[in-house]
Length: 108
Image (cartoon, rainbow, N blue to C red; front, top):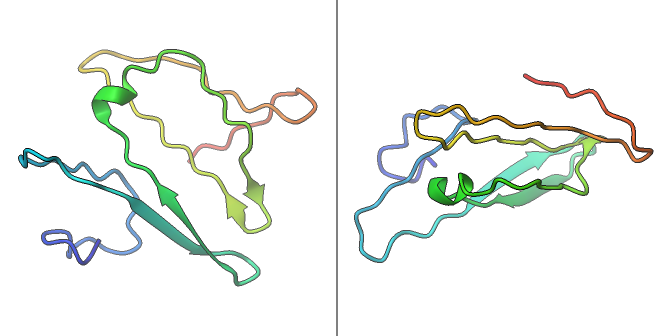
């Protein structure tokens, strides 16, 4: 992000939400890349897709994430967005083990 005008003062590593707006009639294309080095010294990179705030508020059904990792140098981070304009959105976030039992959820 240090190569984008106006974002140079952000300290690395940046962790947070970046809101991008444009007045261009054609819109803007965005992709995020996240790179990390795991415990074995392997460099890992993945994309972090952008989320439209209008579209994010439309998903009211259950969503299943069939596989995520936590250990061995790997971790999955979930970002939950409240897109309701002034209203309190509620929901349940459950983590279930392979044998069907509930897993404890670590929040930070």
